[in-house]
Amino acid sequence: YNAARLFSVYEPILSSSYTGNSSPNNTWCDSSVKIFEKFEDRNKKNICETSIKYLEQIKKNQDNNYISNGCKYLYYKLYETVYNNSEYSDITYEFYKKLLKEYISKETNTFEDNTEKINDNIFGKLKNLDELYDNFNKYKKSEECNIGSCGCAQKCAEIYKTYQRECSRNYNTPFCVELQKFGENFNEDIRGNVDCNQKIKELQLFNKYNSIIVIIGSGVVLAFIVFSLLILYKVS
Image (cartoon, rainbow, N blue to C red; front, side, top):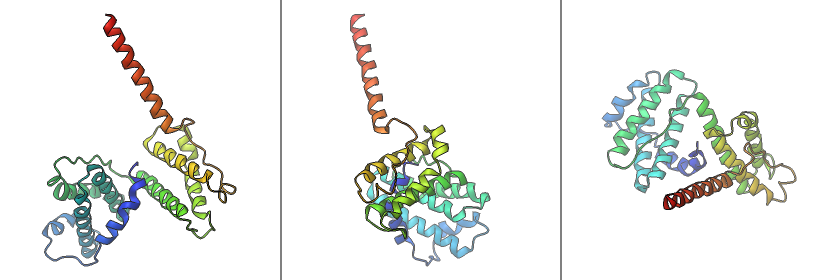
């Protein structure tokens, strides 16, 4: 889920990789897309070749974190094409793994993909995170989202609140941790916006402790334990 905040970075790269015309000579795609039986041949081929062009672009960066997040975005978009076709959930993941093995892993020896297999529930949450960050970025650029100057921020609040009950009960899940990070960033920004902070309340955080404070606190405790062990070792 933590890759969702970066999806906007990869969206234009994927869009620019789509040409609409498939190559008649790409035998790897011809073979690999046969598993998607219900899709038209032309559509299958375009999806495959667009994915390859996209992967060729992101691996030029040579940063494993950048590549990893870019791969997660690709898988998210691949799943979007088969959403509501549950029989293709496993097939899409298999196709995604084959793409990475053929076009990333062979040339990037240190790269390891740890992408979790998506189902409809995970996809729905990823889509909402994607929309949250998309609207938040528009709000920071002062775009209106068709509801006035604070409309984009209002859309963020509406999406966020749909998970209030779920994440208040289980705020330690990966999705809720990422959602809380969004809430913290949103609240910090909205406090400084005189126009919008009168119309939109700060988002209620699921964990009463700020995630940064929790990380710092854990580090202090760990340092104290190590220091204590060193003293005991010297005394003994």
